[in-house]
Image (cartoon, rainbow, N blue to C red):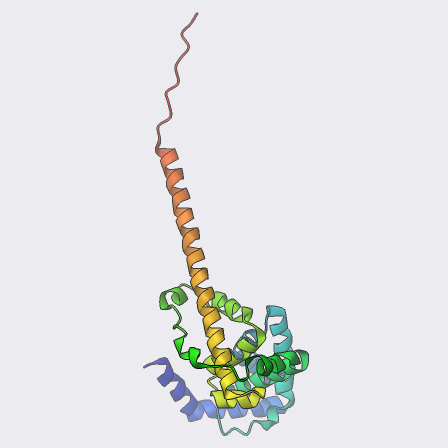
Length: 234
């Protein structure tokens, strides 16, 4: 069974859905054990979302802390008609966007002013990511590359690639045109592709240098030392 099939089965499992309802009801009743369970079950997922929207780990921690408080405040808004995880993810994404809009309004303004009206025909010419290079990266390494993206690029990349929003939905969320969303996504992919290839090449160079050093060390240790001449003079 594929991961998608397992995920769909989990979402459609009445028992799992009933467990979510019971957990939320207990949280709303002030059950501390249920609140702890809610945190332990979903904190890694929600913190991962904050990491992708933040430019560094400290900002992500700040976003996650405030987003989780926001979730608890509005937990009664979940009506139980869909997946609790899906609702939590949407609330967290919207919270991150709202906080970034407050702290960095220039992200949204510059996105429109710098990209609006630009010719987007080159978008289709952007090459796909190098699969071999991507497979060499750990999840943390790839996440740090995403965090390096300019703020506007990172927002669109996360919303489109990770969260699955369409360009029309992204345009509505960020107050930009669909063309701008496509342009930001293409540039984000282009930057990531360059960085991934550079990072891959750097790791290859380091590995080759390490191999050469180990080869020299092995050669040195294998070379016989000259025999010592005993002094026989009186």
